[in-house]
Amino acid sequence: MTGLARNTAKLFSNDGKLFVVALDHPQFFGPLDGLERPLEILEGLASTVADGFIVNPGLIKLMDPDLVAAKKLIVRSSLGGSKFSDYKTVHPIVFGADTLVNYGADAAIVMLILGSHDYDSMENVARAIEEYHSLSVPVIVEILAEDFSKTGDPELVRTGARIAAELGADVLKVFFTEDFSSVIEGCPVPVILAGGPKNLDALSMAKSAKESGAKGLAFGRNVFQSADPVSLVSELDRVLRG
Image: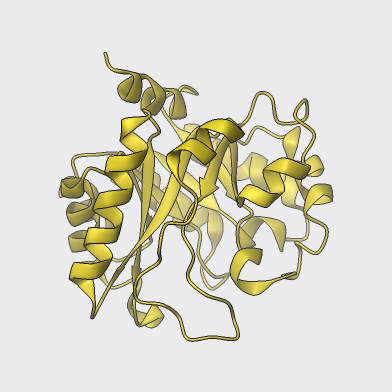
């Protein structure tokens, strides 16, 4: 078994599943509701059953290492602009493999944007995967549509997941869509469900995705903007591993 294979397997070391809370939104939105004080929400969630967190590099430098010693840290490594600018069709990779290794990250997460400049976006992701793999860092690729309203389009999700897997992604993070099982069936690497905006019932969505074959959850706003994030994490975990 290679170092990369070992590190990828470690992501799913808890009963073959991966449940992470996404806290990386402020890179685009700034002090988003519920994440105004990120270290406080992190401290509150560190004692839950969640396997880890998706974070930006700046937060890793601020967090208490002892607090997250048993948690997996997945680092958002690409940039897409801010809420004051147009959403980029290619998210450049700005935090390389050396940086992630130095931070003790368990994986990188990057965006594959489809809808117009697909070649450029695919090349960007493929080169990033090659670099991270050179140091055995697993790569999670998140599939998004240039037109965000189409991010849950079944054909885009199915196609994007397979493209990313063919480029070498180790794990896929995708939004829920109709016929979610077809996304799983058409993708040869593990798929985890992105929570997305709070427009669907989180528990129902997680249950459906799990029954379709999803290997994990990556929920952000549905958790940190909920009335009781700690309780919701417990409920989602029961759905995933039940």
